Image 1 (cartoon, rainbow over the protein chains, first blue to last red):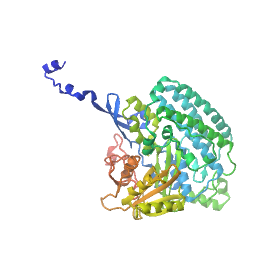
Image 2 (cartoon, chains in turn green, brown):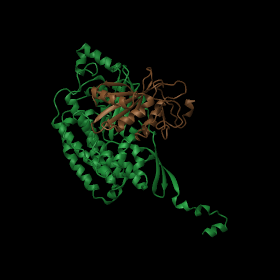
Image 3 (tube, each protein chain N blue to C red):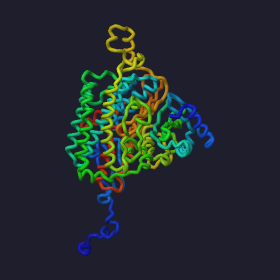
Image 4 (cartoon, rainbow over the protein chains, first blue to last red):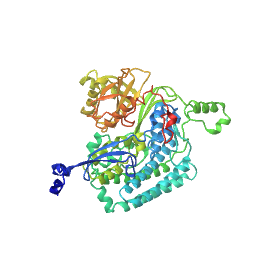
Length: 408
Length: 172
């Protein structure tokens, strides 16, 4: 063929180069692509089917939430921060409210601690269900999405029952929670918590012996424990590599010290382990939900400090003082003495930290979120390098980034 | 967290090995912080990471804050964790504003903690703090051609004009 090309005067230099099998092609994936779980753009250098270099490009849904928070009084920041990582909104609320409570040194009542723990764990199951459904969908297991979203809907029903909203509930307040759980919630929640481990067993039955799923996940996307620690990766990704690091156990916050639960860890650190760890976490979370319901203490659900917490509605028509407090809190908000606090909790994706700097006014001078997706995304290059494109998609799903949290 | 005496012990040990690197300590709201000389922040971080018996080898967060109108104006926070003792310590470096078009500078800690790569870029993006030795110091969340440092306190909160099809004229 070379001779014939030469006869018609076409250069054959390209064909003769020894590197022509190793031609690198740069491909753009996203930002609008269903497998990127949001608006993540990947610039990938491919050699055939192999990923040789990878650069994630982020910032497509940056909305300047941290800057906007500086222009809002403390209590108005809560619905803002919920919208960062839009799948784990209770965690964002807890990180922010917890940081402000530490700034003003406000102790929350035991019932509020338990209610918060309860909703955090429901939210963790919800977040893992969204992850499991969408990731399995990426790997071709379409029915998983419907099963996972069936249970997710039950959690959203519970959220709606207690808070009036299915997503972005604004349920946590500085000082506790805004309302007590309604009559009938406990029974419904208990029924869900009893049912959830059975459902998890059904998911496992669908996936654990599915040859396609196993081939796509086992042995792919392996990153060593040491490298993950260097990259600051936390959460299920780190635990799948065998490091039992969980802030719920390490640091003392909310009602976790009173809860009896295990930390699932993996051994190899491949995508299969990541799947196993998250699925096992759902069972543990359901157990925490049950324990919260069993041990739910009586008493107030929000602290009784009128300088920071709204007075009960019933007092407004009888007490002048309550009315003044209510007016001051709603119009100006409360002032926070100068100081700074970094408070971090274990979110569904890892360490979710909130840094709040107070300058003495009624608005925070700086709100920063250490979002686990943002930091974990740095490990993606290590996971995908020198693997097939298909494995890259599997690794991205198992990484579970929420781009709203990455970009903020 | 190390308690207040524990923090002073750490300070004493750093003082022995790198005299003058730690300027002050603070123990506020059960959070321990070391205020370090910004020129020697790498020295202090290396000591905390590698010193046997300390091993603050996990950088959980790196973020900045603008303390305007205080001087020095910019504060860099390194949140370190010692996973064996389950303790946190914050290393804080305060940078003055050089004024004018000049940007404040500090050494990058990417070689010590690879996790800082994206977080230093984020700080650069929003505060205009330059990290010397960073492998790829470009904007990360804002557009590449953006002008200004939006998280600084003197940067106004305001709307960015959004152009939709057929509505470009309105923002002329």
